[in-house]
Every structure is written in C-alpha cells, then in structure tokens.
Length: 441
Ligand code: ADP
Ligand code: ASP
Ligand code: MG
Image (cartoon, rainbow, N blue to C red; front, side, top):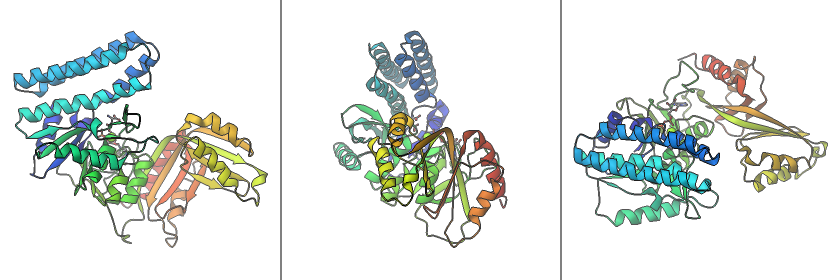
C-alpha cells in the first residue's frame, strides 16, 4: 500500500492511513511519500543553496521546521510519543542545517536534502503506529532500494536485499518504508525522480510477488482526462497494463511514468484508490483480454516540456542507414525519443530531456538542416485503434481541426495516437477532445 503526499499531509489524514492499513489482517508493506509540499520545499531550498542564497534557504528551512512542529503537536495524543517525534524531527532538521552549511552545495548534497521528506514522514508515521498499538516495523529503504549506473532500478538487488532484511527480524504484520529514495551505483543517496513513491511501491510489490499493489491518493482512480484542466472527467474502472503505462508515461500525473513495468512483469494488479473515500471503486490496472465491447476511446493524457527536432536532408532520399545514424546521436547522449514521424526527406522526433540538446543539435547538423521547437506538448489518446476499427482516428483528428498540429503518430501500437502541438493549445485541445470523444457519457 502506497500513500501519497496528500494522504499523509495532515495529521487527521495520517491517522486515517493508520486505520486503512489495519482494515484487514493481510500482511503488508506500507510505502509513504513525504508530506505534501515538502519535496517542493526541499527543492526550493536546494535551489537557493546552489545560488548561494543562504539567508533565503535558512528562512525556508525555519518555515518547514515550524510546519513539522505543529504537525507533531496535533498528531499524537500521548506526551511520550510527542516527545519522541519532536526529537526525531529535530535530528532530521539538524541534518538539513548541516547540508545547508556545506561550503560547496553539489548534487550529492541536494539528493541527501531531497531524501529528508520521506525520512521524516515515515518516522512520524511509525511512531503514530506505536502510539495506536499497531504492530509494525520501519525498515530503511536506503538499505534495499537501488538504481544502477543508468538510473534504472536494480530489481534483483532490491529483491535479494529486501528479503535478507525481512528475514533478519521476527515477522511483522506491517512493514513501513520510504517511497522515492534509494542508493545509486556509487552508493550515494539518490531518488526515483518526482512522483517516485509509486515506483517504489510497484518495485516492492514485484520483489515480494505481492498479490496486489495499492496506490492510495486524493482522487477516485485514473480519470479519462486531466481533471486539473478538464471539468467533466470521470474515473475508469479498469485499464490494461499497456493502457495505464501509456497514460502514465504521457503525463497522467496520478502515476509515476514507469511504475507499471514491475507490476506488469509479475502480473500483479495495481489499484488506484482514494484515501479520502476508501469505499469508492477506484481503478484496477491488470491483464485485460482484448474485449471488443470496451469503448473505442479510453482516456487522454498530456505531457508538457517537450522539444521537437526536425532534420531535413535530401541525402535521406532512397538512402539506407540514415535513421540509424540519427538514433545513434540520441543514444550517445542517453536521451530517449518519445515520438517520431518521417517523410522521404525529413524526420521529426521529440525528446523530453533537453539536457544535451545543444550537443545533439550540433551533431545532427552534420546530416542536414535542423529545426528545434520548444514548449511543445504531446497529447496521447489511449483506446482501441486496431487497424480494422475504422473511423476512430478520423474522429480524434476531426475534433482537433481548428488547432495547429505539429506531429501525429499512429500505428506504433494498437492503443495509442500521439499528437504534438504547441503548449499554448493544450487546454483547448484537451477540452475539445473531451467534449467530442466522450459525449456518450
Ligand atoms: P500523490 O501525492 O498521492 O502521489 P499526485 O498529485 O502525484 O498524488 O497524483 C494525483 C493527482 O493527479 C490528482 O489529484 C489529479 O489532479 C492528478 N491527475 C492528473 N491526471 C489525472 C488522471 N488522468 N486521473 C486522475 N488524476 C489525475
Ligand atoms: N515526495 C516525492 C515527490 O514529491 C515522491 C512522491 O511523492 O512520490 O516527488
Ligand atoms: Mg504522485
């Protein structure tokens, strides 16, 4: 069971989580995020420290500390646990102050800083469980969560070390651990990127071959469209692993982009549930037979911050090996490509990590003219787009007829149409698609 930032972001919510984990007697692993707002605050503090704004960082740290002191005050009834939590929180903030005082603030310090949120929330929650008489054990994620040199989770290491740690204690009905944080191949503290607690939960579910993975958040499951931008959205009861993976990867914030992969590997259903409304049905993501009675269009997601790259070259005409040369440039800079479209004399592709954009552009210029467009958005429509299903793609494009489209990608899989457009058109595109594709609702 994984509980996100808002699920533990208020003392009464944290108490509700304690109730939820004891609703049945199933043994479980509980993964917690940082309290909502904490990771953002730690990122802002780190930014100040990079820019040598010590005073501003100190003010932010004080504000955050006050927030935690108030939280502790309200969370516990019993003075003994309150005192213990105050000490733990103070110790954690001492670490934050030590990091803030380092002469040269580097990415090593930043990653230790970002880990503090989950270290705080789990210690506070473990003490709450003790106060409430819930038999549980806090196990440190930094001892078994690990990424390799490419930043990919090392599932074998995770499984072996987690099992070793669990075997070293008498069995507990409930284990608590930190989401998001891990060690990397240099044995430094690192993380699984924003929203990474979902990924932790899925990796642990896979490592333990758990019968289910539950992601508890602040909404009744995966909606058919981004509820932050579109008014009339509704939850989807069931999604296949493939559908959910596409939606997560292409921007549905409710799930970390790659967190479906470990669950799918071991065929473990993933439930998306609402901490504020535990009885709501939510969404289950599982192996679904390709049933033809599913609606043609399932859901829409959008991913911002995309850069489009167009390479035009007459040398491409009738040449072979051209695409390989282009792809090699991206491989060299470890930059994944999301979308691609080609014509006889040009290739357009998109990336979401612009870290090496200037190096990549320079190398691509050897092959032809290069044009870069920033601030693009990929809109991903997920549904049943099998070639024999006529008219579905036409319906999608028809509803966007007033909006300038930069790229369209269809046919790569049976369940995705991706459309690239300038980010200024995103809200209108999502709303228009919602109206025309889900009007039957
Ligand atoms: P947590 O802190 O629990 O991990 P997140 O904020 O990461 O929660 O994810 C939940 C939020 O994702 C929702 O409050 C909602 O605003 C947003 N969201 C974006 N797209 C979708 C979608 N398609 N379905 C449901 N929620 C979505
Ligand atoms: N606390 C981390 C974040 O805000 C991880 C998570 O919440 O999943 O990104
Ligand atoms: Mg999240």
